[in-house]
Amino acid sequence: MEWRDDGLIIGVRQYGEASVILEAMTRGHGRHLGLVRGGRSQRMRAVLQPGNSAELVWRARLDEQLGTWAVEPTQLRAATLMASAEALHAVGLICALLRLIAERDPHPDLYETAVLIAGHIGDERLAPLLVRLEIEILRETGFGLDLSRCAATGAREDLAYVSPKSGRAVSLAAGAPYRERLLPLPPFLREEAPDGEPTPQDVLDGFSLTGFFLKRDVFTPRGQGMPEARRAYLAEFSKRQEHFPTE
Amino acid sequence: MGDRVCGPEIERLIQLLARLPGLGPRSARRAALHLIRKREELFGPLAEAMRVARDTIVSCSICGNVDSCDPCTICRDERRDPSTLIVVETVGDLWALERSGAVKARYHVLGGVLSPLDGVGPKDLNISSLIERVAAGGISEVILAVNATVDGQTTAHYVTDLISHLGVRTTRLAHGVPVGGELDYLDEGTLAAALRARTDF
Image 1 (tube, rainbow over the protein chains, first blue to last red):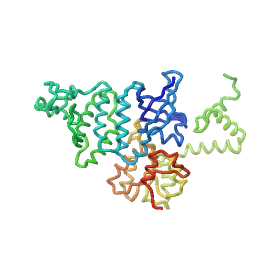
Image 2: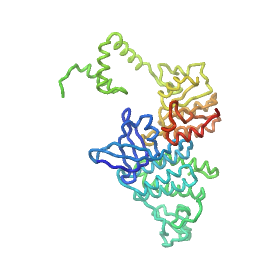
Image 3: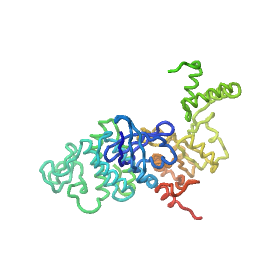
Image 4: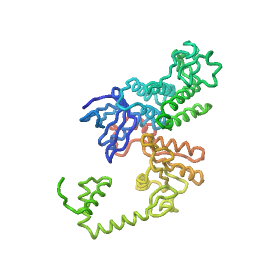
């Protein structure tokens, strides 16, 4: 068995003295693991860092085996990320989210989103993109939110809330009597999102929304807590915005 | 399976030696044979040294270093600068920095780095004792000498966050071109970091 694919490195675990088990999100083969012989060498250590992109060749005698990787770096981002706590925590969060996907199950859209986000680490558009990644993860794990129309009236305009029970959008008018119990839907997550960058409060509302469903539907049933990287990223994001509290 | 060529005692010795880093079954056999040949001048003293080390080695209650006394030799050393604390991942890193001889400071060994993949969280590391040490006063600078990996630097930022309110200067090791390193072979990120951290010549 042999195939070649693009991949985003999401984890590295030491194996023996000289090798590592590399976990990568690939375009056509999903989240995949494999052994990198000599992965602890001076040269390979810089390459095998989470957040880097590489061209990967996977080889094994049988499909069900762990197999070995041959790694050719294409974009080395890790050294740049190390200067910023926010960037490092963002990478940690991306990796933690991608690890929720079943192994060897292709999710090409998710891969594209993850690579796009990795390319935006360090700029202003990162936080809303991370919210979108969380929404995509919810969808890919079977808990997608329906943010296209109001669950009560079917209206597509003035969507302002999300029902914590059904994960469906609710319009401003229909949700008004229950607004204490509903989750705010930030404008940038609506199907017809307004132009311009979302405000920091919108981004935090977005994280609260996805955080609620990720915790309830994805992490808690697996017996896991929310990733530490998520808490740390939100703390750094909030710190940068100064006047916004953390969740 | 071939016939046995030695008794169970020697086989056990070879099996245990093969579990040491850098040794496989073949090199373990060579080491065992060497020990047997040098029975009086090496095997006996080595066995005795290992027994004594096993009975006496403890983890330092102050810094997490390993030594035969608690507090360790470094923490007891009055000539070291008590106002500078170097935070390292492992005892191996502490020994490496000591070999460099660049700073005569005190150390704090974290015992690893935060790693979600390996399930290592803040509670699994010596972070709370570090905070207590810094909060106790007398330290003016904390040098974060952790590895230049994503996990290492995430840990460094986490520690920095925790001690930021304690009023100590926090520094970290420079990232850039290693001695003997050729620019052509360096990754873009390291080169960018080296350029950002350039100094006057």
